[in-house]
Length: 492
Image (cartoon, rainbow, N blue to C red):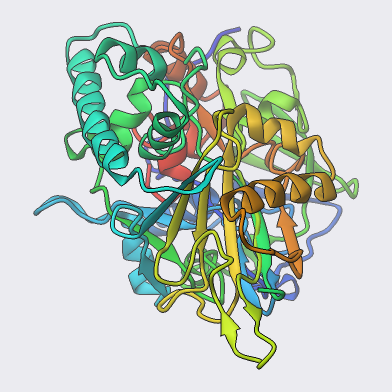
């Protein structure tokens, strides 16, 4: 058998992202069908891709479909949680890109505007404080030079792609333009300016801390597609969701505009997908099943690779070469904390935070690249003032390493970095701590897909292709917006 390079054109295939507390489409609104049921189209997964596929079917006049979601709410990797009296995002957090000139508007921004999502511009360039192992030290000139290096890197990447040259690792591309970092500060600057990429891969007494697993990508094509309007990008603006309903609100409210109760099943964990030339059947964890003439699978690449769902029969060429060559990256741990303490007279002081209220970001340069480098405060006017919440981002190999550690071990490491950043301050333990392990979550197995340099367009065509009546959607199936650009909210 072989992959059939054919696509189901009526379906818009979209991305996935994170949630908040409370459900806009609550469990009791989902239908409870009999042990076995039948529909025309089955949609597997209730994230961005699944909901927009359902909406597209509805717009095409096809309403005989059922959407299955394993969790008790829609959202996928739009995933929020209560923390320290606020709602924070443990998955997607930003809208990356708004609009370039008269070009198209980012469709995620359109959804955000439509459903009144509360956001705030997140400007790392205009609000940054720098640190290294000696404490606070100003190397903003290096940071600004790093921005120029990144622009040169993006232009070089675009030139290679336009000439159909072999893709490079991001590390190799920087070497080609002569911009290899020579010390810890330059490594930290490069780390932040390249969007927290993994370049070495082949392709107060009252505060709260969140460790977040973040962006990492190996291919130069990722950067070109993410940031360049010529490649379909929207702009380099970044907007942070601070909506206390959660980022997931945009997809849940959108679902409410068309989705009927009988078309949705929540708490429906798919264990087996049987596919053939005559149709598709999904077997759920409770033993029930639902059959369809067609199915759209929006499961993440990590779930497919880890075989958390069994596909019967096996896909042609087990495992498919495209799946074997792709990787799914972890998202960043967040360390959230109250960033202030009290004087004896009861007044607050703010000098112990790695990200004081007058700045938004803190950049830490360690001799070990990627060791808790990027800090961000939400305890800032326009975001979540008075929350005392900060988070730190970790990516790639380092994120995989700390996923294997206990929360206490991760917190101790992050606190060690924080105290290194402020050697002359006494920093108390945080009131709360949050660290979501994306790779170890069987519903996701990571945060987004990534193309290694050896993964060429034909491999991706094979991956995107349907097998009989089973089709695939989601950020990993997009040739322009896979990876970090999709997770942080772009349309495929």
